[in-house]
Length: 145
Image (cartoon, rainbow, N blue to C red):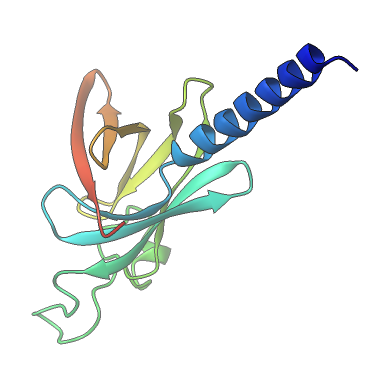
């Protein structure tokens, strides 16, 4: 093997490691604060998907009951006694563009919407969802590093 071939192989190997590191760094895993600051969502790999789970609530006690808040607005009445804390609100599949798409559950109104999550610069995660023709987005900020 010539010196040129060895250098070329080393350069290719370094570029492959850099691509793997960049792909890993581009994943939206971690702890995120919702735009209105009322919850932390833990985003983690779950198989090939990204899953989001509520792990902190600003209002951890329901003022009406003095208990942990329940999912009282769920359209499925059989689920209204489950705790919001620990609730998985999405499991989104990669869409091939670096983003993830799939349904997201909204505990505020008990409905599920088609959505997409996209990692943005400066430690932001964009959540874009639609209800019929009406679409909106919010930015979640990374908690810690």
